Length: 274
Length: 308
Image (cartoon, rainbow over all chains, first blue to last red; front, side, top):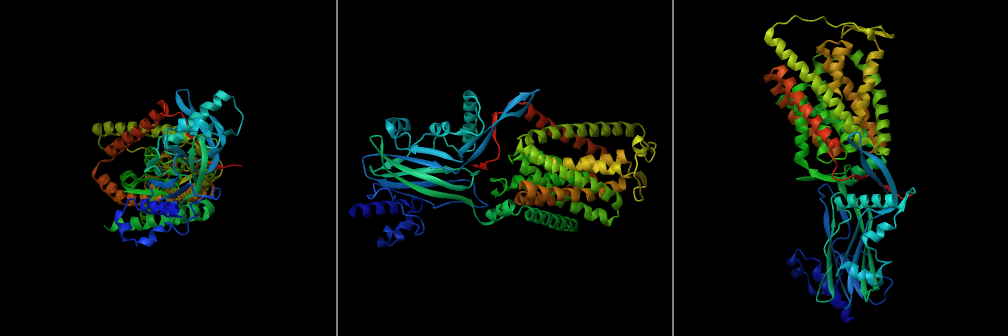
C-alpha cells in the first residue's frame, strides 16, 4: 500500500512538469487521483502487483487547425532493478513504395512495390542502448525498427534483393516525414525508479489509434508490460471538413463551389468599390 | 503563422498561401488570365501534394472567374451561344480529365504527368508570347500606325459540318470546332487545375477567329463552369479539394487582382506580354530542372490503404 501511494505521488509530481505552480495549488489529498478520470487504468491486467506503472501527458493527439506536430511525454515508475523499453506503433495499413528511374533523361516512377501491415508510425526507445538489451533475449516480443520491418509481407512476390531495396526506400521516406524517428532520445531514469521519455509526432501524422507499450526488462527478460492506446485524430473544424470530404464528397464539392462563388463575387464587388 | 490544411494533411504558413493567392491575383488582374498556371506549380514547390494543389486550385479558379465574369457580363462582352457550345466540350473534357487524373494517380504517375504537361505548355506559350511581343515591339518602332489585317482568315477547319451562326462573334463556323477546343481545355483544366484561359484566349482569337472584345468574357464564362465541374468531380471521386487552402488563395487573389489591373493600366501591352512570357518561361525552366535533376530521394509513397 505504501509503495502504491509513493508511485501515485511520483506520477502526480511529473504530470504538470511544465507548470510547477499548479501543483502547489492542489490540495494534498487530491494528488493521488489520476490526471484524467476517464482514461483507462495504468495498471496492466496481466500483472497483479504493479511492477510498472505508466501514464501519458495527454490522452490523445488532437489535430486542430493550429496543429504543427506534438510531443507527448510518457512517464512512470518501476520496481528496480530493471531497464525500460518503450515502443510506439501507429495503425498498420498497406503502403505502396515507388522508385524513380531515369528514362530519356527524365526522372519518373518506374518501379512499385506494395507491402502489407506497414505501421504508420514506429518508434522505440530504451533506458540503455537497445542492441544490448534486445540481444539478451527480449527480442521476439520487442522488435527494433529493422526487425519489425523485415517481417513485412510484400503484397506481390519479388526477389529478395529487390524487396530489401524497396523496404529501405520505405524507411527512408518515413524517416524523412518523421514517422520513423531514428533517435527520439533515450528513456531517462531518475532515482532508480522513475522514468520519462518524450515521443515526437510530426505535423503530417496519419490518423488512427496508436499503441504505446512500455516494457520492464530484467536480465534481458520481460517481467512486466503496460500498453496504452493513443488515439490520433482531427478535431473541431478540421475534423468536420475532412469528414465531409471523406464521406460526403459530392456535397463537399458543392459546398466548395458555393464558397468560391460567394467569395469571388463578394471579393470582386468589394475591391471595385475601393 | 501556421495553419493546418485538413485535406492536404499538413500545416503551412498562412502568409505564404495568401501571398501565392495575391501573386496569382496580380497576374489575373494584369493579364486577364487566371494565374492558376503559375499558382499550381508554386503550390507544388512549397510542398502541397500535387493532387491536392490541382483540385484546390480549380476551386480557386471558380472564385476568380466569377469575379471577372461579373464585369464582363455588365459590359455585354459575353457571347453566350459560343460560351454554351464551348461549355458542352468543356464539360465532357473536364469529366474525362478527372477520370484520367484518377487513373494516373492510381498508377503513381500523376506527379510526373502534371510536371511534363506544365513544362510543355508553359514553354510553348512562353516562347510564342515572347516572340509575338518582340515582333510587335520591333514593328511598332518602324511603323507606329501599322495596317490592320483582315478580321479573320479562312482555313480548312471552316469546312467542317454542323455550322452554326454566332452573331455576337460575327462568325459562321462549325460547332465541332469550339466543342473540340472546349474538350481539350477541359482536360487541361482537370489535370493541371487551371482555368485554361491562357490557352483558350489565344485559341479563340487565332483558331476560331473571334473578335478580341468578346473573347475574355466568353472564355471566363466557359472557365467558370468547367472549374466548377472539376471541383465537384475531384471532391466526389478523389476527395482532394482543400477548401481551407482554396479560401486562402481566394482571399489573397481578391487583394492582388485590382493591384494587377492598376499596374496593367500603367504599362504598355507589349511590355506586359514580354514580362509575362519571361515569368512563364522561368517557371517552365524550374519545373524542367526538377524533372532532370537527380532527386534527393528515389523513393516515394503512394496512398495508404487499409489492409485488405
